[in-house]
Length: 86
Picture (cartoon, rainbow, N blue to C red):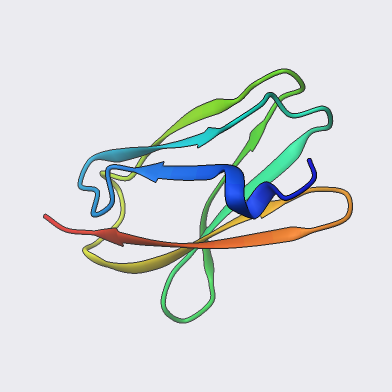
């Protein structure tokens, strides 16, 4: 998962009922996904299984606002900004 930051797409962004995280290549180790609200509280969690390269995350249970998406692998944490609008 070298240079993961350059190889991650979040779309659509802004999102409403969900968004997709897409990587340029499949993960080789389980990679955790955390969605944090503007207070830094984890409001949703998921993960990439070995071999996956995209993941749909439903957001219909979250309110409009700015969130941080953290991808956490063995040796790095990547931060991406996500906007949810209804």
